[in-house]
Length: 325
Image (cartoon, helix red, strand yellow):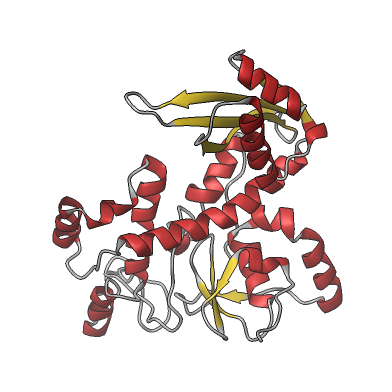
């Protein structure tokens, strides 16, 4: 029987095998070695907002014990990576979206990784393009003179688009960003038009299937749900809005629940869609109340933190709200 995973780190990582695991937020693969030090370091460097909420006390205690600086090596670079998060300011709603889709990074090699999730393969060769070698002197010093890349570097630049390469991972995450940001269907990667576009633009790139895209999106959602839930728990005055929507020319109805609160850090309002539930039963107060309770419990929202619930004044939904309050 496998050993029970107790550390909170595993809320943001998925184990690939006994030695490797993958970050659900950015897709990078790391060796665990039986511990979580590498995983903690990754959260500190790449996802500081998540780390600040979930691991601040743990990292502080560990630093007092070890009293050693943390140095993490980027798998796609031969030198230790010391990049830090550059995403500060803006409203809290954008902060949550940035953590999910568009966190900015000072390190140009990692900038796209923070746009969504970038899956790196362990042991894949570092890629050096012609533009990145134009100012490199092969004796080890920087030079303003242009240098012609070697044959080996040119072939590496091509192979990075194949399965397991760094560019292949970036393209996959660009597709996921497009799907999440623009609300495209998951099966869009199987459409002939998109396949032809990618075939012409990047002939060596293999377009992932719908099942692969679905797996990445689900892993991303599960981890980001924890992040957003922590944000909601920090807000002590929540205003909710809810309404029932019926699909035109159909018999399907949905109940929508949205949360609004003031971010105390910058005094700006945050709006988060908590969920959309399919009303399969009669629209009675009891059924509506049960659906609302389920969505509130999923986000761990306490009743005492709710200051108001705004509705369309329908008799059934007003009665359901009274049952909650």
